[in-house]
Image (cartoon, rainbow, N blue to C red):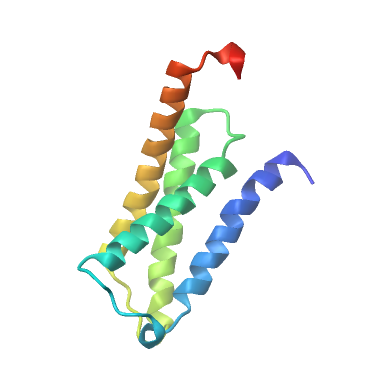
Length: 128
């Protein structure tokens, strides 16, 4: 197995987990404890998915292309996930869920960028 494929495994597994979670009928899900809990859950799940997509695209040489790939793959998967929920009893396709998903992916990119800048600032390259 080559390195490029191994780097994609976390994103593939996470996409499967999202799909399985989306299959759970609405009446089986526990009720929200606080307002916007559902949106926070969407944001966190897609933030983590974004991190796995960043790892999966780490062999892409051009930074802009890599960012574009993460945004496109994450957003398209979020859209397909929302459409998929139209066919699950008790679930709905919600544009605000899609927005929370997409923001999760965007913030994963911002988070990784900040972490990399901090690493480069405080840890000299020759020590890594």
